[in-house]
Length: 209
Image (cartoon, rainbow, N blue to C red):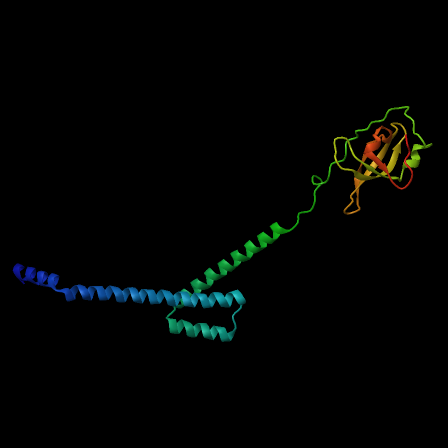
């Protein structure tokens, strides 16, 4: 074909609107085909995901159904294996996240640092102070007392557990009013030095030091 004939054919095709229309139709058909194949794969993936989410094992009836879907949707065996692996990994990752959140929500056991620190003795002994109506300071052991420690606003419940004759101080054990449990630590206090407005004796008459 001569050069002039080739140019004539090229110009004729460029001016022919049917040629452009055919190209557009081909692109549209290819797009529709790709879109349809993508929808088929998504539909098949959704079915597999639903089966796996319900149970990790697939019975004969569902296996037959999956094979039938593969044939109807034109899904290859390689695609199915890839989908199975992806679903399995996602399910395992989801289970791990759930377990992790459950462990984070579990109440943590109390450590020694969570416990309330023992009270520092504030009311120290003054040797030679009178014991008032108490003939023997050992008699106060076992008495219950409400005490407002120095710089505190509220009263706390204590039980007198011991008496140290050398220091003339009583060991008080704090009582948790909610759980009715006692702390192991003792607070050593000279109860004679506690202002009357900061101490309330229970289970009997006040000593009146």
